[in-house]
Length: 188
Image (cartoon, rainbow, N blue to C red; front, top):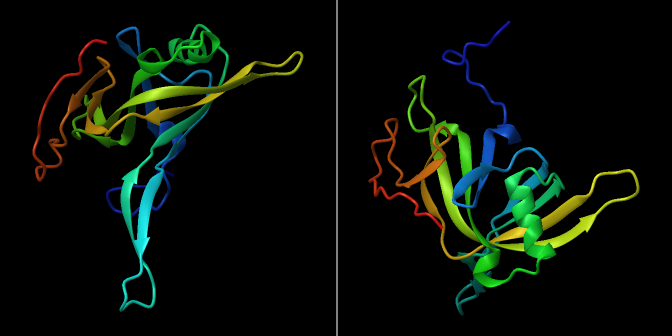
């Protein structure tokens, strides 16, 4: 028996597959899907605290973020994101050679409710790939792990899962309260 979501309030959490991660490799966004066992976001909020002379307790406020995305993947070289991330450590890449564009897409937040919609709310980051290790025991898969560390601020926008493009801006056909500043990403 199916539940009619228009008449019943569903209180189920979103499942991990409803967040899609894309890494820009050789000018094209590639889904970080097959091979990836986990991609975990750590907001890394930084804070400052102070107790003023008339306070009994401290006041704390968020001052910034050191966002990072720890990942673990089976070494499937045919998957462009897996190969690109492993190559950073394998080839000893540094600086801009170890940086990528990375987009995290909320598939549960569509641009519109139209049946053919392929655009979803997304956050665009420039990240430095910090490789950790390649591990594996005899007769088992090789597992590569590392962390994608944010470089600068993120950009909110919309990702089109059909043509694999990101557009900056936060207005959708279902949200008319926010202004839009549309820009296309450039080839790297």
